[in-house]
Image 1: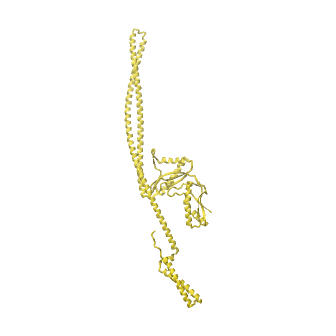
Image 2: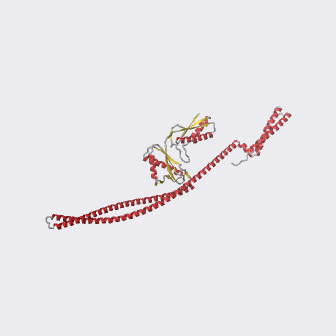
Image 3: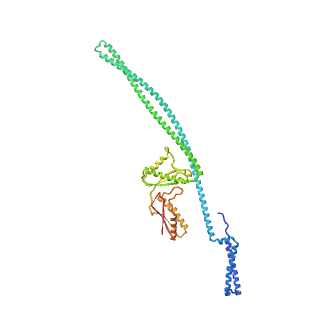
Length: 504
């Protein structure tokens, strides 16, 4: 505050009163002596009493005239006399208002520092999103290269399969040729055997032709051996060709399987490229929106600030768990819309190990399975995953806590000593400090779950209860112990309701 010059009017007035007092004493003393010497008498009084009355009257009249003169000459004195204590009270009020304004200035300075910090965080988030966008672009490039490689391998496998198919066709033709030769050889062998049998049958009848028949038989035996060797060779060749055919068929089946695998890989890479491009476009839009909203729109949700909560009973069926989840989701969306958000909910997320995209349906199924598997009562909380600005989509995250019993009805949470002889304002401040610090700290220590975010409250105390407590403490007119007691049975996720007791 700027330096102010001291107000000299009160000091001048006091100095004038002192001087006039001395002057009155001097004049009254002289006047009394003169009246005493002259032995005047008023209203039948004795001269001594007359002198006393005149002296007192002069002592009264002169200060009145002095004050009247100062009152007429000085406007500051007139205001000081007219206003009196009300001016002092107004000065105190103005002083208190100045103190409050100084406090407001400090709070605004703190708020400015907080906004600067949030702006820094948003800048860091924008940098991270840019880095992620760059990573997605590199992944898209890698996926395109893998796609081209897979297509080249698939083409090469297709050409090799066509070559093997041609070899298989030639082998089949050779097999048919060898089979026809085997049939012809078998026919010749059967004819030779038949002729040999005829010659042997006519051996007794054609003894003359024995030598010729023997020669013929030897020749036929040699031909038979030659044909049998040729038959064995052809059968071996047929077995080799059939084995080669099976090898070709196995290779063709393997190549067809490889082609199917490559085609499936091509489809997967294509889908992956499309997903990465969509995610890249989404992140680019999200980054642009975040930059725009963070610069033009007010902040409506801090990171991890709570939007809604529900209590979930244990051992729910899948249908009941799904209904509980969607009830919490709807409450969070209602709160987000109420504060000015475009919408709220889950979004697809990318996992790094192994790399894949987790859709919203898969995330919701995981949350519902988690609710179904619990055997204890839970508190499910929906909160903002990041800072959110007006008009934005609020990305939610869901957390769960055990909802155990913290306070039975009537349990003393904390107590303090308050002097009932003090002013109402001091008693109110002491009670407010007791509730806001002592009771809150003890409740958090005992396991109560506060509302996450900028408020972080556990409950509230009604104004009527506070006023009644102030009157009760004030009526005792002594130092008393004030106890904060749980008004009803309270679990970790409930609102904490208090009632107060006074003890001596």
